[in-house]
Image (tube, rainbow, N blue to C red; front, side):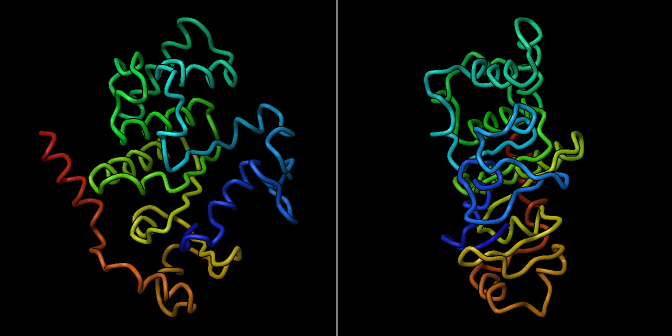
Length: 233
C-alpha cells in the first residue's frame, strides 16, 4: 500500500489489525468477516494478523530483555514454556539473522536495525498468516534496509507468510511488491499487479508519486546487498 503522508495507508493497516473501527465496511480474512476491534477477536484471529511498526524504539518494552519480548507471544499464542520456549526464542533470533546471545540483552543495547529485526521476530512468534509492515524500514539507512527486505523475502519463501507492506517509498514497492494499492485522501485511486501499476499509462496521482522520487536502477537492492556482504567480509 503506497501513498504520500496523510493518504490513509497507515490507518488502513490499523483497521485491518483491529486497532481502530472502520466508519463503514468490514475486514475479511480468507473470505470471513473479522470483528472490527482487536478486543473482540479470539486468540486465533489475533494470532493470524500481526503488525510491525516504523519505530521499534517505542514498540519494544525497554525494561524487558529480548528473551522476554519474544517469550510472551510464544506463551500466549503457542502455550510454550520453559526449555521449549527458550529453544523457540533461539530459533526466532536465528530466523531474523541475530545472534542467539542477544536474548539476554535489552532493546537499548541493540542498533536500530537489530531492534527492528527483534520486532519482526516477535511478529513471527505468533506464526501469523499476515504481517502488516507499517513503514518498517523508513528510519533505517539503505544498507540496513536492503538486508531487512531481503530477509523478509527469504522468510516469505520459507514460511508462506503474507505481508501488507505500507510505504511511501516506490523503490521498495518496485523491489518487493506482488500487488500494489495506491491511496490518496483515504481512497484507493489505483491498484493491480506491480507491473500494471508501475507501467504507463498512469492515473494522475500515481504519475505524481512516480515523478516525485529519484529514478533508481532496477537492480538497486541486489547491488546494495552485494555491497553489504563485501563490507561484512
